[in-house]
Image (cartoon, rainbow, N blue to C red; front, side, top):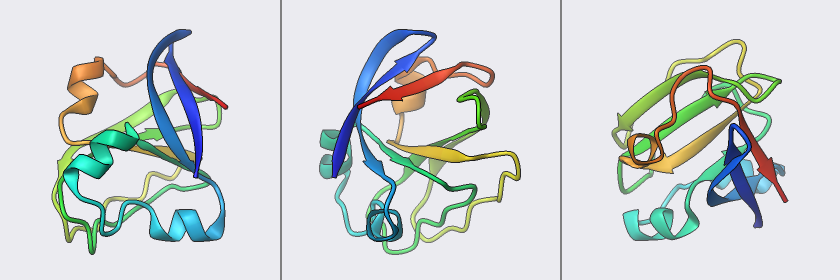
Length: 116
């Protein structure tokens, strides 16, 4: 899986993995332990406007981004086995380990950019 540096408002905040093929988007974080997800930093799924957490082993935070890279919705502490809402304007999203959104200070309207 490709890696990218994630910037918020042009400031580096962490390194994440990128899921931009059918196979990587399909698998996402399924079957990964909380430690594996933390080691990845997060997973950018593109294109994507809705996810589920079936077959996941731990809770995650989800950040939905529009085509400009602005945060339009945040779901924190999404438990395994759930269907998340579809965010119509979302072009991609980032799945983070539970608690990472708060730790990084990500808020709605922040601009995020992944650089490979």
